[in-house]
Image (cartoon, rainbow over all chains, first blue to last red; front, side, top):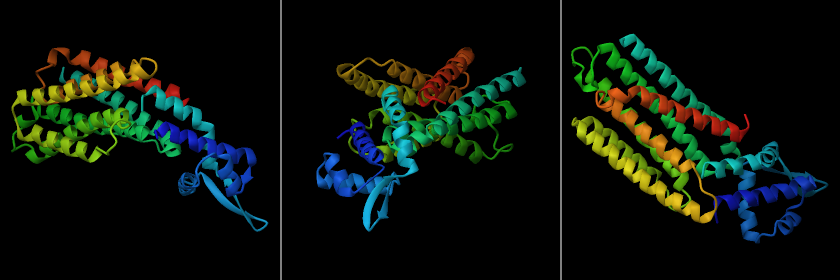
Length: 88
Length: 222
């Protein structure tokens, strides 16, 4: 797994959350097309790096984007273009 | 004449340090969002270039102040030799690490294991060797070996990139940057060796750093 692919996966997960505004973990796992273990790995990492936040709403747990997650989506193309340009 | 040379040195160092720091701080947000190793090592390379240039300027200042050609020629009665030796060790360490970070930023995808500790160790050895061995030819030999090693690694990476997609002029650019950087190191260690080409080296090095800054700023859109 290359780092580029990893950034793409992060973009895809954040994109799903952005489109739904807030989403429960199970539909997020389903829509992200990943294995459960791999999803957990990414999910924990995104929470730890503060791209996502967990919120409680009507007794259920939802996931939503933080400002940092939003910023990642805005800057995604710049990041990829920078990595390509400098062969990083 | 000495004042004019010193002004040139100050302007030259200022350009390189500012360009390097602008690249380092300009790419901060991209790293904090991506946590990409390549971006991290690329940024560190320029931070270390800035630090190396800071110590290079300090060495030049000492040389101008005492009007001597080499840092080891300063009499122990006018300045504690430890000051010049530590400054030279730091300059050589930051220089070597800047080169290794730049190399690692491109090569980290191919090298699965983390080699940064190894590079720190090599840089410390290079720095100590530069101070302990006072033979000018050993400095040149060491830097030529370093340059050959870098060219081989960059060529391997370049061949792979041709196989994959488009050709990249950036590899030529990286080799040029490292080549002129090594000339800068030789200029400090053996001042008379490249005296005739000094202005050319300064102009070429400044041009390369300015071009790198331009490419970075263009990409990050600032």
